[in-house]
Length: 391
Image 1 (cartoon, rainbow, N blue to C red):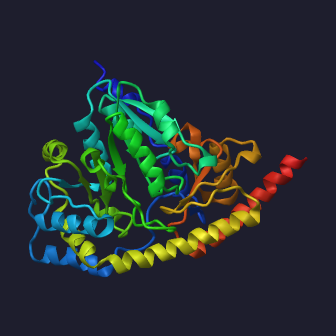
Image 2: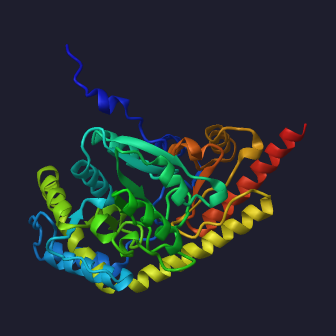
Image 3: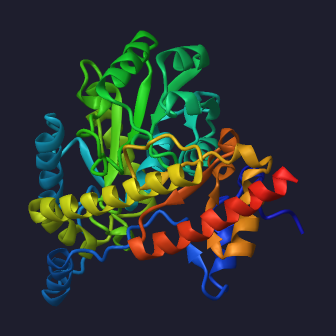
């Protein structure tokens, strides 16, 4: 019998995140600090709107691009937050989470052999999505000493005559790093110089603690060459509703909508009605959750200082990325021992790229009570490792 599988998909590595959670799910008294999912329930007024849509029998397909009312609210939201206007009819597409938007943007924009620059550590889907689109991923290893921000010099050094797209993902998963306006201005200058396009994944835009998030699309000349991707999962605690969106030039969005039409048809109808309510009346919920995350972020940073564990201060998302190089262990070995000995699951930094070696991703999208218990166990584990290393 001939091989039924595509060589391309077989060569794609599975996500490095899942292994630890398959183990922890069957481990009594274990605490997981690894999943990037809010511990808040979707706010009641948003759930009510979804329930109401079901009660009224609004269970049919929407238009391929999404409910017009939702696209108008997305346009209003971006104008309110970023000061740029997207045409809700021609420049906005509602997708099944931000993940679908990333996938179809790449498939619609690259030809075989085009290079896609991917700064790492980063979310696990960018590189496989680029490969599946027949692009060539070009990795930039971001540096701890730069707070894992992308510099113009690093970008310039990675560009060749085959480079077409830069993927930006800030606030960043897994590091919590941000890019301030001055950082983005330097990047935009290089992008314009080399006639590149940007896929800007801004799913954590509402979870920025130091100052308001700035999109690279707001900079002069960049709206025309940026696909802005966002969604409802993180800001509104709507992970299971599976809803995101992409905004960009009509020329690109038309093709993305066509691919979405063939692959998906439309995003979930119930989720779309709920999302309208989220955008209209959810700012207070977002602010409340952001403040809770910020308190947890400060608690973790205080605990790391108490432990003497090196970690730059992240100002976005809900992750910290502490350095564990002092222990002379790989990130995976550290995470596995920590799970086995203290029943706490964290994610090895290498799940997000090779340059994540020597780091761990710890999510603080968990209750403060769980964080206190888990950090107590971590303090005990680190003390034990230091004692072993001193012998």
